[in-house]
Image 1 (cartoon, rainbow, N blue to C red):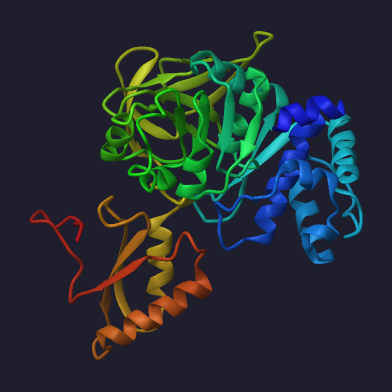
Image 2: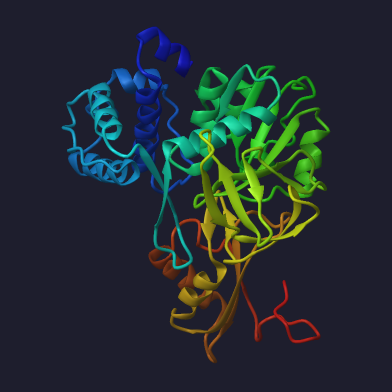
Length: 395
C-alpha cells in the first residue's frame, strides 16, 4: 500500500509522487517494446533497493535521468548503478521543489515527434480534486497504466492522494487485474485491457468502479461491463489539457469536470483553487447540449488510439508508401470485432506478388514504425476500396 508505506516512513507525499514517476519511467525504459508495461514489483521494493538490483546499465540510467529532467524541469545528474533509489528520488524532489514545480507530459504530436505538454503542480491537483468530487466511495485504487502519462498521473497518483486512500500497481493483464479486485476498488485502466476483461469480471464485484481513458470505449464493451454490476466512468482528456469531461453511460453526453467551464467560442477554462483561470482550445469537435454537456465528434488531428498510444493513420500510410513495390495505401483503425490495431490496404505495383509485398511491408514497418503504428493486418487488392460516391471506404 503506497500511501500507508509513505506515512509509515514519514516521507513527504510530494517526494513519493515523484518517486512513483521515477518508477514508471524506469520500467518503461526496461521494456520499451511494450508501451503499457508496468513493473510487477512493489514500489516499496523499488524505493528500498538499488538501481543495480533492477539490472540497469549506465546507459539506461542516463536515458531515465534525461526523461525525468525533461518531465520535471530539473538538471539532476545520472546516478550510478550502485546508488540507492531512495537517494535518487530525494535528489529529484529537492531539485523539483526549488524549481517551478512543473510536470511535463509528452505526446506523439501530429508529426509523430514527442510533443511536451507543460503543467504546473497546482493545475494537476485541481484536476484530481475535481475528479474526486464525482467518484463514489473509494477504499483503494488499482493502477494498470504508466504514471508518467497524463491519465496515469492524474488518476493513478494524484486522485488517491486527494482521496487519502492506498494505491497498488497491477500488471496490465486481465487475470492479474481480476485476481486483485476487492469491493471498494477503483481501477485505472484503458479500453484495450477492459475489452479483454469482460468475460472475467464477476457479478460479486458490484462495489467496484472502473475508470477508462485514452480512447473511446466501444459500446458493446461498456454494456458488457455494466451488466456485471460494475460502475464504469469514462474520462475524456488530452495530455495538452488534462482531464476534461466524463460520462457514466455509453449513450450519455460528456459532462465537463466541476473545475471546467466552456465559453461561447468553444474555449475551455480551468478555474484553479485561488480563482485564477487557464484557457484551452478544444482538440475535438463537440455537439453541445448546454454549457456543460456535449456529444464527442471527430478528432481534429485525426489521431486514433492503439494500446493507449496516439497514432496517425495518414502518417503511417505515407511511411508505407515509401516501401519498394507499393503503389497506393490506405490505413485505418480496426473495427472492434477485428481487433485493436491498425490495418492497411495495399495496392502493389505491377508485377509485385501479393505474398512478397506482405512480407516486405512487415519487415519495412518494423524498421520504420513504432510498435503501436505497425499494422496488424495487410489486405492486398488491385484498387483502394471506395464508396459509390468515390470516398474512401472500409474493408
